[in-house]
Length: 309
Ligand SMILES: C[C@](O)(CO)[C@H](O)COP(=O)(O)OP(=O)(O)OC[C@H]1O[C@@H](n2ccc(N)nc2=O)[C@H](O)[C@@H]1O
Ligand SMILES: Nc1ncnc2c1ncn2[C@@H]1O[C@H](COP(=O)(O)OP(=O)(O)OP(=O)(O)O)[C@@H](O)[C@H]1O
Image (cartoon, rainbow, N blue to C red; front, side):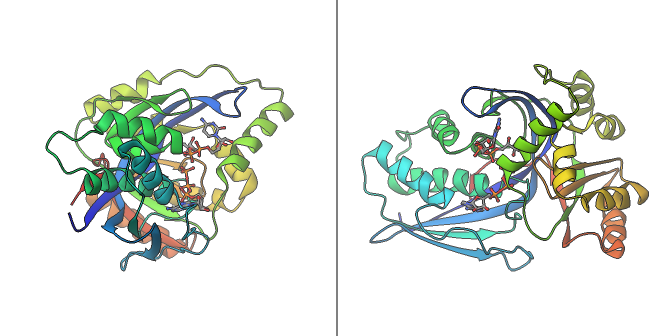
C-alpha cells in the first residue's frame, strides 16, 4: 500500500443540550450531530517516522496557524493509537488538507482524527477482513475526543454520554446550510466553563437533557421549517458572551430570511438553514454583503463519515 487518502466531514449540532457537569470534567449531553459537505482530507503514506504537514485546501480560506504539526496533532495521536492496536510502528506521513475552520465549533480536528484512524487502519492492514473494524475505530475515536466517533460515522446521529455514544437518526432528503466563519477561534473547554458560570449566575441548575421529539420528526419527514424551529444550542449564550459580535452575524442571517440560525457547537462559526439550494445561494450572498463573517461557505447535509477516496 503506497498512500491512502480519506475525507472526513465537519458537523453542525442540531440539538446541543448540556446537562450537569460530571465528576470527570465532562457534561452529559444530548448531542444531535449532522455531518455536512465541508470536508478535510488526510493522506497517510509510509515514512521513516511519524510526520505531519498541514495546509489549507486551495478553495478554502482557513487560517491554519495554531494547528500543531507535531505529535500533538489529533491525526498524529490517532495514528499512534491505531499503530499500538495493530502492533506496528507509527511510521507514517500524514498530510492534512483543511477546509474546516480551526477551533470553529465544526469539529475540524476531530474530522482529521477520524480520517487518520481510517487511513492508517487501511495503510497498515489492507486485508479483506481487517483486524480493526468500524466499531474498533469508533472506540479508539472516543479516546481521542468526544466528537471523533461521529466524524467516523457521519450522517445524522444522536450522541449521548459526553457525545460519544451514537445512534444514527432517521432523516429524509438533503438540507442546505450556509456557514459564517469568524476570525479567531473559541476554546471548547472555555465555552463549557462559561455555560456553567452563566447557569450559576442565573440560578439555573442543569437538568438531565432529553432528545427533542420535534427535531426527530422534522428530520424523519424532511420538514425544513420544522427543523429550523427545532434547532437549539445550550452553548450559544456562552459563545455569545465570549464573542458578542456573533449576535450581529446571527441577526444578519435571520434578516436575510434564514429558516434557522444558531452558533455551531462551541462556536464561533454560525450556521444558517436555507429552504433550498437557491435560497442558500441568496442567503450566502446576503451574508457576504453584510460583512459579518471572515468567510461564507455553503454545504449540504447529511454527509457520510470518514471515507477512503
Ligand atoms: C462542543 C462539541 O463540539 C459539540 O459536539 C463537543 O461537545 C466538544 O467535543 P470535543 O471538541 O471532541 O471535546 P473533547 O476533546 O472531548 O473535550 C474538550 C473539553 O470540552 C469539555 N467538554 C467536552 C464534551 C462534553 N460532553 N462535556 C465537556 O465539558 C471539557 O472541558 C473537555 O475537557
Ligand atoms: N488536526 C487538527 N486540526 C485542527 N486543530 C487541531 C488539530 N489537532 C489538534 N488541534 C488543536 O485543537 C484545537 C481545536 O481545534 P478544532 O478545529 O478541532 O476545534 P473545534 O472545531 O472548535 O472543535 P469542536 O467543534 O470539536 O469543539 C486547535 O486550536 C488546535 O490547537
